[in-house]
Image (cartoon, rainbow, N blue to C red; front, side, top):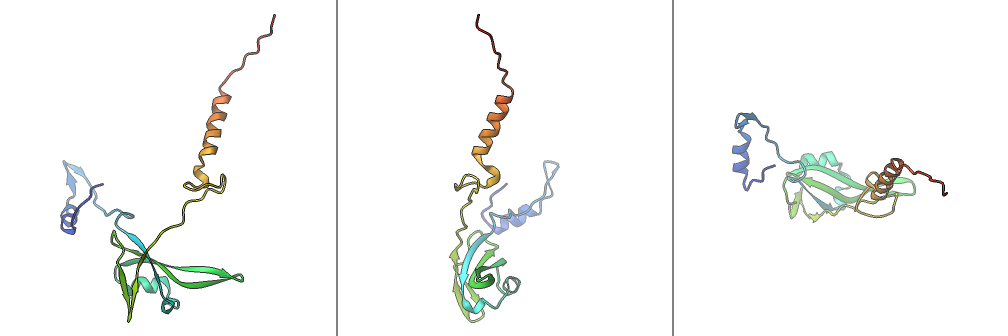
Length: 148
């Protein structure tokens, strides 16, 4: 991974096909070159995510937040936008609207096995320790020696 300071450097590096007679491929990093932001507008409730991606410049993905009310899924006025720049824009123009973009803060990872945060159920440290202890104990041979 190589960090560059400008788009000109990225264009020049993208033209390179070999490095010391070793073939290389140059591609932008998927998560480091994108950012997420949140906009809210009840005027955008009727728009789908695909329509927002087509109409808003610099937006690569849009996800409308939905909630359940009485067993029905209702679209809220909140939209999570993914932009193609490392920092989200401060505002977006949608038609005659100027919408301020707030930073997106995702929910923390929650383990449903040990009820703690920071890891998922597949990476539970307690279960890993128990598995290691089980393997260690299975390889231990206990000799019972009768006393006199």
